[in-house]
Structures are given as structure tokens and as C-alpha cells.
Length: 190
Image (cartoon, rainbow, N blue to C red; front, side, top):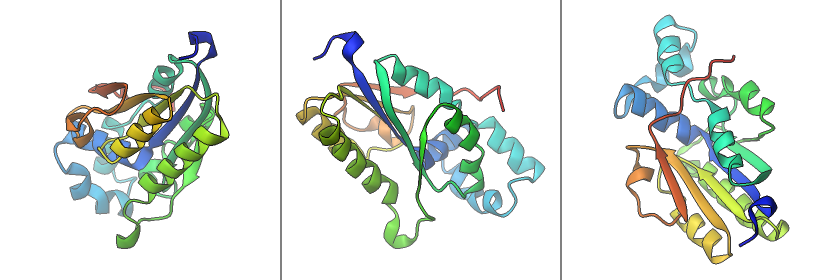
């Protein structure tokens, strides 16, 4: 493995998934599913806005953690950025030089669109950037186990970051290092 000063890190965020998992962690199991329609219909409603604010994620904390492994060479977040719950994060992500990958609203046939797109991009990046040493996968479920295994087979150090208590934190550990967290603190800067 490369020396610490030579480490190059790619970060992939399944953003829809993290937002939903964190919302459920803060408000209770399946809370996002129960509140989804209200969030879509009127995100400015006082009660909806308060629930969203209580479950706000500090993207900077995630990016800072990833950068502790080396130089960030690319950071991508996959989501439907037209969704009000995700749109709240756009300026925070852009300020941290995160590439926003637009995924259009999921239909029944496109349920795993983010998973597939993220996995394809990650594998392509490992061949396109042969000096990439670390891959950080930020997700709230175990859908990325095969990707983590492939990254390891291709000689990359894999770090998995997920929400404690979510499916991801109970899944097998294919990552070289994993960090289920109970702390995605709300952002103080807006």
C-alpha cells in the first residue's frame, strides 16, 4: 500500500440512502416512508421543516473523515437533486467540491438506480485512476457489499461509512474499515 502522503481517495455517497437512513435513525424506524408524501407535498410546512431540520446531516463531517485517509481526488453524491429533502444539501455539497450526480425520480423499474450508477462509476474510476488507493463508500444499506469486495480485489483500501442501526451496520463487513455512526451532526452553517 502507498505511503500516507501518497494516498488518493475517492468518495461515493448514496445520498438518498443516507438521508433516509439518518431520518429513520432520528425519528424512528420507517419514519421517512411514513413522512415521504408530506415532505414532497409541502416541505415548508412547519412540522415537516422541523423534522427535516432535526435530521439534517453535516456533509462536512463525512468529507473531513474521508479526507483523513489522504488526498480526495473525487467526491460524488448520487441522488434526485430535485427532491426537496436533497435540494437542501446542494449548497453544502457544492461548497465541499462534491460532484452532484442527478438520478431521476425512481420508478418501480429503477429502484436501484443509484446503486448501479455508483458501482459502475467506482469500478470505472479504479481503472481510469490506477493510483487511486482508497475508496470510501457512504451508504445506509448493504447493497454495496459486492462493490466493496471488488474494490478490495482490485487492491484498494475500502472504507464503509453507514448509519448505525441501519441495514448497513448489520451486514457482513467486506470493507477493510467500516464506521457505522450515530453522529451525523446537524450543520450549523446554512
